[in-house]
Image (tube, rainbow, N blue to C red):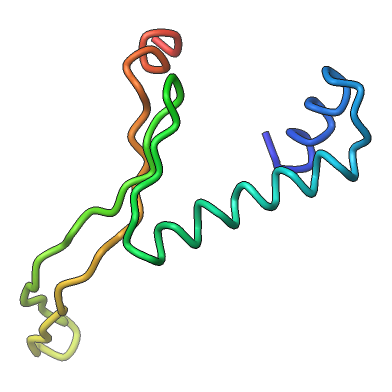
Length: 90
């Protein structure tokens, strides 16, 4: 399902104009994005959590040039579905 399909489905189920729904969906994604950029996790009960996972520094190899490079420690965004969500998907 794409964002456009999501907006259409929500608009059809709620009777709210698609433009308004699109604005709300876009703003929700932006708030989640900004919270995670600021180092804060986002928890949505019954749905899941948008969390930051820390990756430690490591040494990687470039096989083509036979060299080693150091990848610095960094955070990556991740989604962890709630238990209820996982049970319904199974």
